[in-house]
Length: 140
Ligand code: THU
Image 1: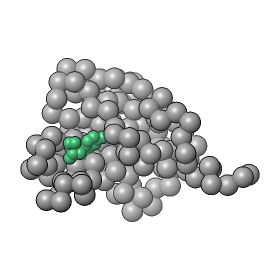
Image 2 (image 1 turned 90 degrees about the horizontal axis):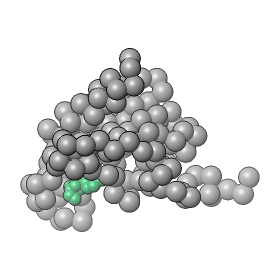
Image 3 (image 1 turned 180 degrees about the vertical axis):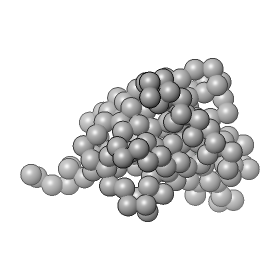
Protein backbone atom coordinates (compact mmCIF):
# COMPACT_ATOMS: atom_id res chain seq x y z
CA UNK A 1 0.00 0.00 0.00
CA UNK A 2 1.42 3.40 -0.90
CA UNK A 3 1.93 5.99 1.82
CA UNK A 4 -0.99 8.05 0.49
CA UNK A 5 -3.34 5.07 0.39
CA UNK A 6 -2.36 4.29 3.95
CA UNK A 7 -3.13 7.82 5.01
CA UNK A 8 -6.33 8.07 3.00
CA UNK A 9 -7.71 4.74 4.22
CA UNK A 10 -7.18 5.73 7.84
CA UNK A 11 -8.81 9.12 7.30
CA UNK A 12 -11.71 7.37 5.55
CA UNK A 13 -12.16 5.11 8.59
CA UNK A 14 -12.20 8.17 10.86
CA UNK A 15 -14.77 9.79 8.60
CA UNK A 16 -17.02 6.73 8.77
CA UNK A 17 -16.78 6.82 12.56
CA UNK A 18 -17.88 10.45 12.55
CA UNK A 19 -21.23 9.37 11.12
CA UNK A 20 -22.07 7.87 14.55
CA UNK A 21 -21.17 11.05 16.43
CA UNK A 22 -23.54 11.89 19.27
CA UNK A 23 -23.03 15.64 19.43
CA UNK A 24 -26.46 17.30 19.77
CA UNK A 25 -25.04 20.17 21.87
CA UNK A 26 -21.99 21.32 19.93
CA UNK A 27 -23.12 19.85 16.61
CA UNK A 28 -19.40 19.37 16.00
CA UNK A 29 -18.86 15.83 14.76
CA UNK A 30 -15.42 14.27 15.16
CA UNK A 31 -14.11 10.88 14.08
CA UNK A 32 -10.84 9.21 15.02
CA UNK A 33 -9.07 6.11 13.75
CA UNK A 34 -6.04 4.34 15.21
CA UNK A 35 -3.85 1.96 13.23
CA UNK A 36 -1.83 -0.61 15.15
CA UNK A 37 1.30 -2.48 14.11
CA UNK A 38 -0.72 -5.67 13.49
CA UNK A 39 -2.85 -3.76 10.95
CA UNK A 40 -5.88 -3.45 13.22
CA UNK A 41 -7.87 -0.24 12.91
CA UNK A 42 -9.92 0.95 15.90
CA UNK A 43 -12.25 3.91 15.52
CA UNK A 44 -14.10 6.28 17.82
CA UNK A 45 -16.43 9.23 17.68
CA UNK A 46 -17.34 11.99 20.12
CA UNK A 47 -20.11 11.31 22.62
CA UNK A 48 -21.66 14.29 24.36
CA UNK A 49 -23.85 14.43 27.45
CA UNK A 50 -26.61 16.69 28.78
CA UNK A 51 -24.09 17.42 31.52
CA UNK A 52 -21.78 19.07 28.99
CA UNK A 53 -18.50 18.56 30.82
CA UNK A 54 -18.86 14.79 30.63
CA UNK A 55 -18.27 14.79 26.87
CA UNK A 56 -15.99 12.07 25.53
CA UNK A 57 -13.80 13.02 22.59
CA UNK A 58 -13.47 10.78 19.55
CA UNK A 59 -9.80 9.97 20.21
CA UNK A 60 -10.47 9.03 23.84
CA UNK A 61 -13.34 6.74 22.81
CA UNK A 62 -11.06 5.07 20.24
CA UNK A 63 -8.33 4.52 22.83
CA UNK A 64 -10.84 3.09 25.33
CA UNK A 65 -12.13 0.68 22.68
CA UNK A 66 -8.58 -0.34 21.76
CA UNK A 67 -7.63 -0.90 25.41
CA UNK A 68 -10.76 -2.98 25.86
CA UNK A 69 -9.72 -5.03 22.81
CA UNK A 70 -6.43 -5.74 24.55
CA UNK A 71 -4.09 -3.35 22.72
CA UNK A 72 -1.18 -2.21 24.84
CA UNK A 73 1.14 -0.37 22.47
CA UNK A 74 1.86 -0.78 18.77
CA UNK A 75 0.08 2.47 17.97
CA UNK A 76 1.55 3.57 14.63
CA UNK A 77 -0.90 6.02 13.10
CA UNK A 78 -3.78 8.23 14.20
CA UNK A 79 -6.33 10.07 12.05
CA UNK A 80 -8.71 12.74 13.34
CA UNK A 81 -11.35 14.43 11.23
CA UNK A 82 -14.22 16.87 11.68
CA UNK A 83 -16.89 18.34 9.44
CA UNK A 84 -14.82 21.45 9.02
CA UNK A 85 -12.68 22.54 6.08
CA UNK A 86 -9.80 23.16 8.47
CA UNK A 87 -7.93 20.24 10.06
CA UNK A 88 -9.05 19.11 13.53
CA UNK A 89 -6.19 18.61 15.96
CA UNK A 90 -6.55 16.48 19.10
CA UNK A 91 -7.42 18.42 22.25
CA UNK A 92 -4.92 18.51 25.11
CA UNK A 93 -6.59 15.75 27.12
CA UNK A 94 -6.70 13.46 24.09
CA UNK A 95 -3.01 14.04 23.42
CA UNK A 96 -2.31 12.77 26.91
CA UNK A 97 -4.64 9.78 26.50
CA UNK A 98 -3.05 8.89 23.14
CA UNK A 99 0.40 9.21 24.66
CA UNK A 100 -0.31 6.46 27.18
CA UNK A 101 -0.89 3.91 24.40
CA UNK A 102 2.06 5.20 22.38
CA UNK A 103 4.43 5.02 25.31
CA UNK A 104 3.36 1.47 26.20
CA UNK A 105 4.79 0.35 22.85
CA UNK A 106 7.53 3.00 22.54
CA UNK A 107 6.09 4.37 19.30
CA UNK A 108 5.76 7.96 18.16
CA UNK A 109 2.60 7.73 16.03
CA UNK A 110 2.09 9.76 12.88
CA UNK A 111 -0.99 11.94 13.34
CA UNK A 112 -3.16 12.98 10.39
CA UNK A 113 -5.23 16.00 11.39
CA UNK A 114 -7.87 16.20 8.69
CA UNK A 115 -10.49 18.59 7.41
CA UNK A 116 -12.18 18.57 4.05
CA UNK A 117 -9.79 21.16 2.63
CA UNK A 118 -6.50 20.18 4.22
CA UNK A 119 -4.65 17.41 6.04
CA UNK A 120 -1.81 18.26 8.38
CA UNK A 121 0.61 15.42 9.07
CA UNK A 122 2.51 15.53 12.31
CA UNK A 123 3.73 13.26 15.13
CA UNK A 124 2.35 12.80 18.60
CA UNK A 125 5.68 13.94 20.05
CA UNK A 126 5.25 17.24 18.21
CA UNK A 127 1.76 17.70 19.60
CA UNK A 128 2.80 16.70 23.12
CA UNK A 129 6.50 17.36 23.67
CA UNK A 130 8.14 16.29 26.93
CA UNK A 131 5.09 14.19 27.74
CA UNK A 132 4.29 12.86 31.17
CA UNK A 133 3.70 9.12 30.82
CA UNK A 134 4.10 5.70 32.42
CA UNK A 135 7.90 6.02 32.44
CA UNK A 136 7.65 9.28 34.41
CA UNK A 137 6.31 7.33 37.38
CA UNK A 138 9.43 5.23 37.85
CA UNK A 139 13.05 6.14 38.49
CA UNK A 140 14.50 3.38 36.34
N1 THU B 1 -13.78 16.92 20.22
C1 THU B 1 -13.24 15.69 19.93
O1 THU B 1 -13.97 14.70 19.81
N2 THU B 1 -11.89 15.60 19.82
C2 THU B 1 -11.03 16.64 19.94
O2 THU B 1 -9.83 16.44 19.95
C3 THU B 1 -11.56 18.01 20.02
C4 THU B 1 -12.98 18.12 20.42
C5 THU B 1 -15.23 17.02 20.37
C6 THU B 1 -15.70 17.25 21.78
C7 THU B 1 -17.05 17.91 21.57
O3 THU B 1 -18.02 16.90 21.42
C8 THU B 1 -16.89 18.64 20.25
O4 THU B 1 -15.73 18.12 19.64
C9 THU B 1 -16.75 20.15 20.39
O5 THU B 1 -15.74 20.47 21.27
